[in-house]
Length: 328
Picture: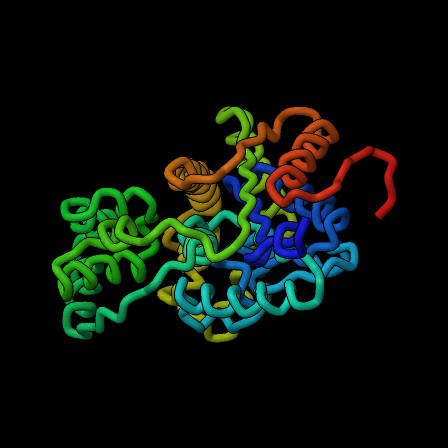
């Protein structure tokens, strides 16, 4: 067999996706250790420094010496975008591969992960500041849900995956249609789903009721860990409630509590409800992606690891076998 047949012609890329609270972090550590991989966060909120509790960011001491990338790379005032993620992530994949290690994206932001996995090309559609201001004023006057309804009328698919709080992305989707006559969904549908990588995507899922219980418990744990203090610290440092980072789940609601616009009980109820809705939107997005092998994360963890190793070994044509007592 020739060298060309022995080795892939494209860099390998492993991806682990799934809704929030499904158990990606624990699974990713075991996989990364066994596969000599470096983890790239595929979460749009974990890029921000000082936003640890509300983003369920893995602590440095919990990373077991495994390199983690695209965590804490910018301040919360920075409007991080999918195009910036794609550029940084693509560079990291090249670097990690060049050192003989496996690039491993772990996260739940579907568009971010998909843009890298399939090498999306983002056309420069320009901007219209007056249009943006008009939409912002509309949101202030009529409310966040009314702004989302405007997008829903022209691009229901994009509206389905966006939270009403995510005003920057809602307005950008409206702006793209305003400038180009095409919806964001149409632009994404026109992307060629051909990966520049030898790609293996594992998706974690579980019974919806069990997942929702885990989400509710995670929110309670975040409150106990000091989420209110984290948001208070961010606001005291000059982070504005309207910044994109503060539109993240948990942050906007606690900011409203600190501004005495909500009681703490109301804020927590909203966080839990909106996080459950977010998980539903994540699963909806992932279901439209191809090339995913799904694993029920509520099943036995060790059995799942064994199944995942078999999937990866088959996809990457690697001599890899998992046993629960092996050392890597």
